[in-house]
Length: 338
Image (cartoon, rainbow, N blue to C red; front, side, top):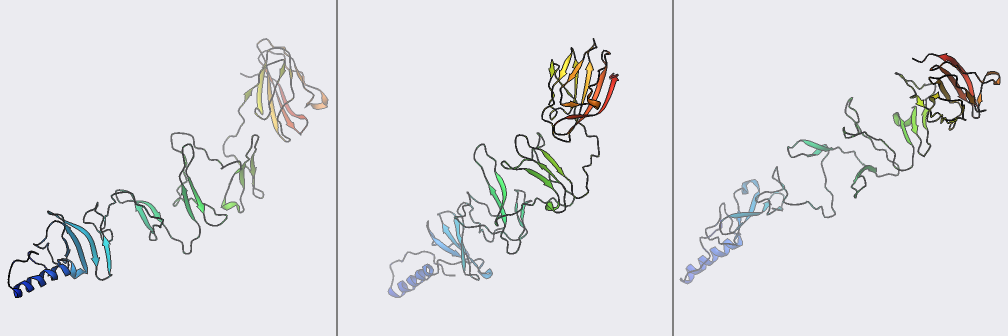
């Protein structure tokens, strides 16, 4: 211990003066080292606490007139000094198991290194984000924030073309959406959206083609089929009754119309080769309405059918479009509809 009771030299003989001066200089030279604050301390005194010197640890303290404030710890084994944040009084960020920041942590253009399989925890100490290391990694995640009206992004970076994997655990699922509104899965920009398996290897796929009139394409793998395990259907659409009835066969491939007078069925629009369409023609409560067909509709022996004349009954026609004509493939006349 190298401390003195005071640092004031009284009038005295030379020998006593020299001894007291040497003691004071020794205390100053050893930074008032000891296991407790020196009795000579006054506001502003720095002193070295040697309480844990047996553990290779010394602590520099500042006396503010009433309390000792820890400034830094010295590891005499590692030959390092760890300065303590004044906001987290008395905490060594190296040895303390629960250090707290007093403000934002600025990395000052440096990186934060996290050990393999270690994590960022929530305020209860539970894992929130676990980091796993790959040796010699060159690809990584990139998180980008966004300004007003734009979406933040989670992406892959590194090499020129890098996949992004989202991995559930076990039989877990990938769930999207808020749970309070419809969820939308879309492509970024004017590109198709393709759904396949096994990274596209030996896989069927569904392609949603981008564009104003884009198709939805089902492409089977090998001899695979498009299979519906439950009923699949086109909702029945009602065409507007008019002197010439319009039929958009793309928007309404299964349609019906109720005749309130003698009418003409106009050429079907927006059809594609190979498409099957059907039309139910219904007599109103009066009956005896006639229907003329545009020349684009082709019937057996080039003869258009004669409709039933009974009120409230219907006639059902099925056509296959070949790219230029709607070819009749079936009809059922004089049907009771209710």
